[in-house]
Image (cartoon, rainbow, N blue to C red):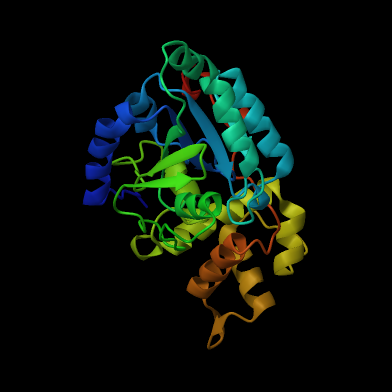
Length: 291
């Protein structure tokens, strides 16, 4: 299955982000803590150039804590500040403004030396669809000012939002790249819900997810789906899960229902916190360029 998704509003968003860049002091790059590398838009480095940034690993509660710690260290080695947050619960959000102040101290000191009146930090939030931007804005603001949803593509316009006296946020629609040169990246985005299910073959996504779980989280896979041993043959694994859960159509296992169940329970955290990639998986030539 080849995954490609690039709605028209995303192309427009890229142009708008580039145009608005001069208005902001810092970039908040929101990624999914379960797939911090795959949920980084390759366009972002090109678009924001040398603007200060903080990578916010959102949904950290859904990711493997040890792996998330590895990612924070990884980004810091690239000269990029990184923080683990949970915008839904508000965990780690106080650190965001504090870190932004640290990164912008020299700039604001220079402004003060020139007699420029102190003002709020102006930040732009960027990220792929369904990374949790609107939820983060609402949590920071304290009100439901930005639209939220469990589907990618909810935010389709830019808006300035004041967060107290210290921060002003420019929200932007989610931007996804035109195509995935690495189809495994597409699969990771599909498993975690960054791409609309309507355009996916969920059977293929479930196959990918089950193979990953079998390799990295076999105990959880066996316990959750009532499988004593994880077979190498994926069809046999589908059969075992289908029979264990009673997912049948007549006398045969309903593979579509098995796929839907697997994806739903992964996203619903029924298998606990999961990380679908770690820094050690990356080849040296795939690492983000140092800023």
